Image (tube, rainbow, N blue to C red; front, side, top):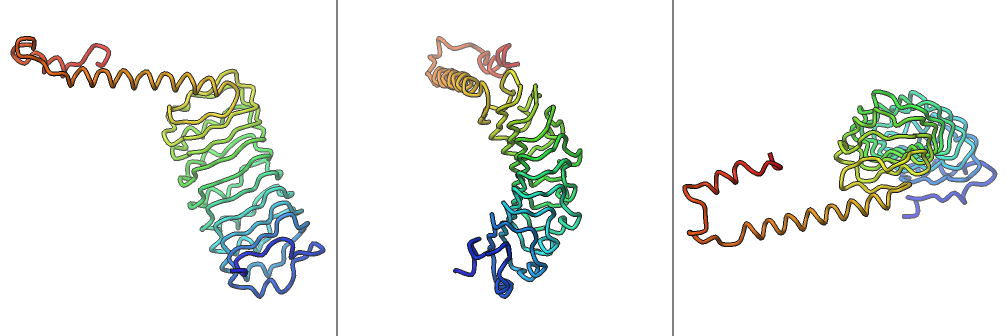
Length: 265
């Protein structure tokens, strides 16, 4: 449906054509790299919008009309001149994906803590140096991109983000990482271009990206394969038949199995 998507080549002279606001059934609006310095209040009339791309413009603040789009699920505000998000941003209760990379955010926007549906948060290439203690309130968050910021140390609050699956901390100033094996949902950790001397300790299912990651994962794979072979050999030995004369007497074998080996206990 051509009404579902408006490409940025419709924009001329840093202005949005007035006839756009008549398309009130529009669900996707792409105004990327259009040189926009402001967006008219009429944007709020597009109440069915689910995707809005305003990245690569010259916006110094989030247009008020953006906060009045109740069904907005995907919002792209990267590469503008934003220094903060307004409190009204918390009204975007349907928002699932927010890309706000390449701006000038020095503080984590508090309004984001009130967005329960947010799943993907792209905050790369900003000026962040810490995260709020209330971050675990964002229990729906699955992907968090923090590359290219100003973190001097690993933000300890991330250790309480039990549901995070993707975490990108590239290009910061982190010299050491804590044990991250407790993050059971983590599947991808990127720590490249940090002054860390060895790969972080993570769970066996985590893919690592960074200095020394390849060697770490190869050694881990060898270890896991060795354990698997050992388990298969032990299962094969347990399945072998035992003749009555060779077996233990008076249930001794069952008792030994219940006790387990010293290593197992």
